[in-house]
Length: 397
Image (cartoon, rainbow, N blue to C red; front, side, top):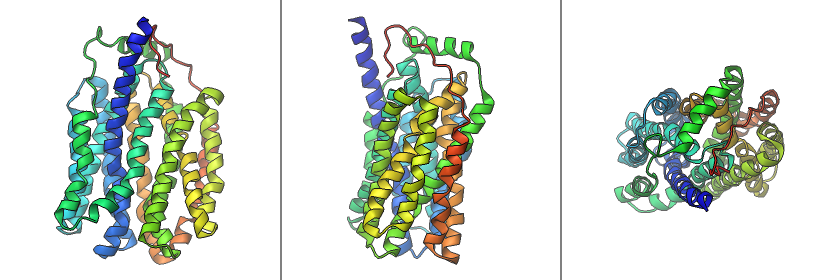
């Protein structure tokens, strides 16, 4: 009976965090979804458009670990709603069309909000459930991927409304996230038994920095592939004869596949273990990414969904692996695995764009079919951490 009483609030807090994550990550997806619009309506080249994606990614890469350190040192419950609001406001301000630098600055503001949100929220998920929390982290990541998947449809629908009103509609998910997306953070040792267990576990297990650095390299490689696909797949479909709607559908398929892969990752980890699941997923990504580039256009959509699923099976598992490699600094680990390494992958965007301007988009995207092989080879060398004990009466999944 006590277990049920304790578990129900945990599930509610996890669900609330997943909902808040969805409201934030819709703005990561919105940046990529805005690229075809900015190319068509503001006459940006491929390199300039990918530079806007870089603005959101690069700012996150610099500051997200700093927010992770803040989450490790002190509770800052105000940070989650403020970050959510900043993520939505930045995207809405893109609609002012005050010139390219102002557009970059607005997207950077959104990226700053996304950067501030993730380490604090990921640490709160782990502290809320106690224990390994693979399933809880999968649900949290799924919330973000749902927001990602809905972003293209949100952008197309909102921008169909003429004038500034359409752009301000893009801020609605952030308003919802501020109101409903954050559960109350536990305060004090007595209020959160998982916090006491986390400290005890961290002291017992110690850190594995070489493994964490290797994991970071894996996440960087994965990030280059997924950010490259999410930035250019809509343009690639249009270049092959699809219209604007076809491009949005391809991007939706990519993001929807990522949502399915995230949930599947938690289930497969329970059967195979996290490390085995991670490197098998990257092996599966190789033919799926190649199919996007070489198969006929109607088959691009299922290949996009399969590629995203394979790339996202490891996503939440890499977060908990990082936290277990650095158990005394879970916020920092979340900031790196959710932010720094993911955002560093965005640095490849302008290079792909410049190569596409010089040759063709298909030629520029060819390396993305090879990089999952590198991720697979690196992931095979990761050690499986010693599982953390689950606090009595808690069920973290």
